[in-house]
Length: 184
Image 1 (cartoon, rainbow, N blue to C red):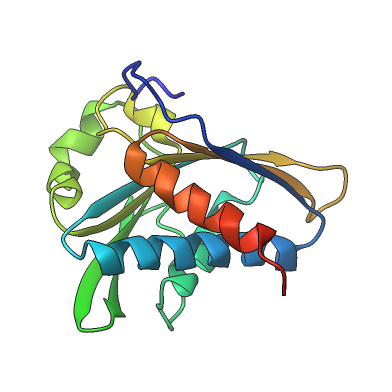
Image 2 (cartoon, rainbow, N blue to C red; image 1 turned 90 degrees about the vertical axis):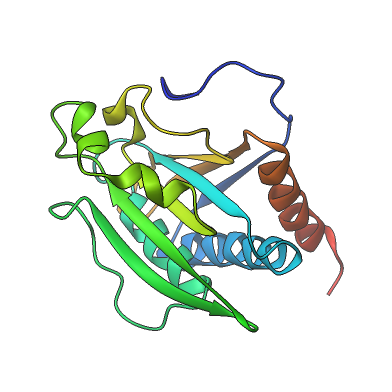
């Protein structure tokens, strides 16, 4: 739980995966994207927030790129390290929504996020993905899922843990678990 979250009765659903190659990281991100798309199809006016946490170089931006592409974006997904936010227009069936990818690494003060006017992106249908949420120290809305990445022994190895922080996040993770458990 980051400093941005208030203690509450958190749904106890989590998913852990050790990825030995970028392809495994991409697969997990794409399964998450598929589950998010399914949830947005059922509730097109919903909004979804994900925190990406981990040390520098653990693959947060790589995971974000695969997640955004898994949501249907066909262009290049760039790191918003210098711009703080990159928006991506996505289309699902007849609905369209925007994924806002934030990277708060360069923020020096939590108020920078508020002063930039980014809070409005959390009130519209769509999706917000925030790298380095701890830099905003309590100024961000509640996350639906918190993802923690930790580097492994080799260059592309990482341990990834997804934890639901809301009922909506719980449903997303449960859909992933059902698809993993389903026989081929």
